[in-house]
Length: 478
Ligand code: UDP
Image 1 (cartoon, protein in one colour):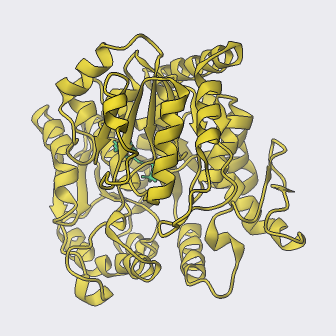
Image 2 (cartoon, protein in one colour):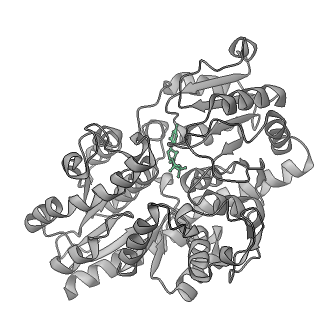
Image 3 (tube, protein in one colour):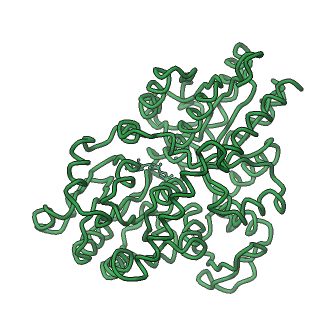
């Protein structure tokens, strides 16, 4: 740390969704541990989800605080109480929710007039942040909570529009101009990329990409050894300044920190660990689809039956009520399965030696947390950029077994696109046999690289130091 000048002051402003807030909290703690003054900006209903991690960090001596901003419910036309993307229940609400991020500009400018921060790190949707940074003469960085590969794939499709040259939604096409030859279908690419004129997210997407063009650079929750060709592609072909500083979840070292990440867990730490301790190493499959997914009762019944038929011990995280469970399921599974209704301490679970596989929706955080724990995965992408991430797990890293998802699943879908046999087969393939062992060895090797990356002198640690240096230089210039 430079002891001559006052510490850098950085504002952290994530998109208000768990998959963005959770890694940004870890990122802010990482900055604070380097002597940076970190101010985390969020709203009253979101604060309880992050305050434990932040308070704990402050108690350890870091300069890190939360500043509350009122959520613009009235201005955005949303009912009171919806302050997080996971609380929206329709496409219309989702669009209003994204647009609500515009209204934070005024209140944050008021704060900044007093604080005079040196830098603001924003998630997507804060499209005003370039103007804000220019007004205060500070650096604006972006943090999108995703990796280099999915950003490169997104950029390729946006630029080359390969999906416009094919006949049907289910025809595979190559994602152009990438270091690997990877195929995808129109049904699997992110919705806004499709360019469907009827879709209300189109306009948002354009606004968002424009906002991004003016950002000074991108902080990425990844590490070089995970996706070296795509780090290079992002920097040299797309030409964007970027720093890999992850996996950020590794700043949580003790069990207590791991289980306090995000919402309050629906299971006690001790109960969870006791259950895991009763199982043999690498025997448990952990099944969780992130913070946003809602399945139909029909799909949940198929998952239950598939897990039962797989014969493997499992922890299954279910966000909804469980009236739909097959008759007698819990009784039959009492020694083999643990259902967590609500929020699971995911990193605590993944890091336990008993866990040998992960059924995941391929959200970037989950993918990276699985990699970091050295756990192979069944890939079951649902939406966003998750089909890109699946390609990475199955075809680039070769640590994933696809469940066979063909298209986006909407939260309102009443069908069960993945049947019990698909699930049983994928879980068995993941857990048993020679190929499973090879997949696990590759995952463990990646997990070791992830841990090395954040150690002193590792690739992420080095990139993080150069980022701090650049921010200090920028401060002196401004
Ligand atoms: N998570 C968790 N417990 C849960 C569900 C999710 O701790 O029950 C965490 C998970 O560890 C990850 C984040 O929430 O850090 C979810 O992010 P991801 O990108 O995987 O998916 P999203 O929720 O954005 O779809």
